[in-house]
Amino acid sequence: MRDLRTFLASEAAAVWEIPGPVSPRHELTALQHALDERGQFPILLARDVARPDGERSGIPVVTNLTASRELTARALGIPDHRETARWFAGRTQSGIDPEVVARDDAPVQQVVWQGEEANLFRLPVLTQHELEPGPYLTAAHATTYDPDTGVDNTAIQRCWVSGPRRMTYFPYPTTHNARNLRKFWAKGEPCPVAFWIGHHPAVLLGTQAKLRYPESHWKAAGGVLGEPLRLVPSVLHGERIMVPADAEIVIEGYAPPDVYTADGPFGEYTGYLGSQVQAPIFEVACITLRRDALYHDYGSGLTDMLVPDNMAMEGKVYELVKAVAPSLVNVHVPTEGRRLHAYLQLRNPGRGEARDALTAALAYRRLKTVIAVDEDVDLFSPQSMLWAVATRVQWSRDSIVIDGLSGSTLDPSLPEGAVTASKMGVDATLPPPPRPGVPRAVPPVATVPEAARSRAAALLESAPAGAWPRS
Amino acid sequence: MSPQMPEIVRDTQGAAWEKRGNTLWVGCTQCATWFPVSPVLTRPGAPAACCPACHSEFKLAAQVPRQGESR
Image 1 (cartoon, rainbow over the protein chains, first blue to last red):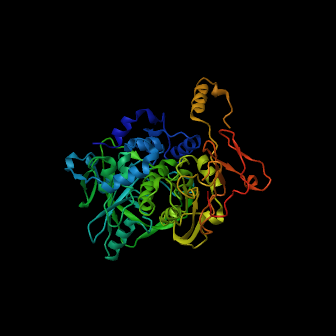
Image 2: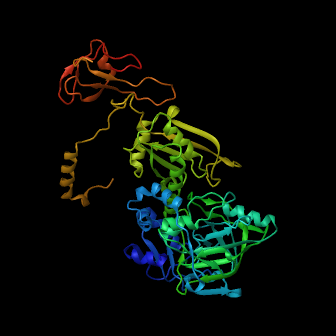
């Protein structure tokens, strides 16, 4: 059995336990911004954190859990983070069925707060960015179900804690949870929801697998975890909504039909604040938690949130593109592009295949720019990618612009009122050889022999590099 | 192909929207090493090409294939 605490224990060297008190209002997030700028990605553990009402919480905060791509890959058991795309696609497609455990074997139900006790202000919820109206749950996995089929769905959705037993609940309109909510509301019924917080990173990423509708995420999460995910019936909704037995905290209740309130502005994955919108409200009925619960927070718009989201996207893009471009060998969704860019690596694509791959990837709503390159280009090096774009592309011939595809309305560059996006694919692959057995009709890449490279590496071993300029 | 006639490859066939290379490659008549040459070396009166591996020299003028051909 693996959970958040077994993961923290296994990666103790990567955890920085922050000395002294730290405020949940901006300070922890400022620390994450500073670490991102320095290119350092420890897991942050803050034991002395105030609650939104100013009292000491007693519940430690874990954040920056997934800011390191290398660490996150290791959590999943991927030998090299650069192999995520194919690995993730395979594991989420095969999956492992969950198992149901009894309530007394579910740590997340060791403590049950009901009635007035179920007070959200008892949790150390963070206010992350300026202009946000208050504390937001950012790592709350909302589980709902389709009333027609009973199939559940899980997705991370932000919630503004606006009162002790009330918060907003913002499922983006195209999400499967929003569909479930609308189905309940169409019948005049409140939508049952359970929000669970805190688990092993493999479970967090597994539940972010991009699936069909309706399709439960539990099996995919088990596939990523490598063992059955342990579930327990929620206290309020019973078997209609199961929750991970080894999570840290669960918030249960309902979203009453057609009740909306203002929500936001909120710091989004783009690095900008999304405008204030209207969102359903959620009324809390009960909170269950471990006796020594940890509160997990994602730094919204920071690498902490981009890394796991993008790694899950790589699996989805691999699956989509591989179906039409068999020469696809790898995908990278770089955090530099937030989640709007994807890089595709192709092995000796035939004529037309790179453009097939680009158009398939552009059909994925989240992506706006897709670049296809050959195997000699390092997808994980911005320098290598820019070199390929600079030297292998003539824009009028090698770029594809398609207007009117579905896209993210959070993109700050969209014209006012636009509900679709203008997207671009860039074929930065080399043309194939004119015929087998002869070179491609392009200049050769300047290289040095392997023996000389080895000698250079040996010489550099003894060089005083510390004193040399870094840029 | 005669061993004295270098093999020359260029990539010119196909539709305008298809990606094509722009570089002329020559196969050395002596050691079979491929290397890129400028079209300048294919013009009448141009100096002989020189293989970068074995340094043998050979003329390319009048041997360049027409568009779409390779030898």
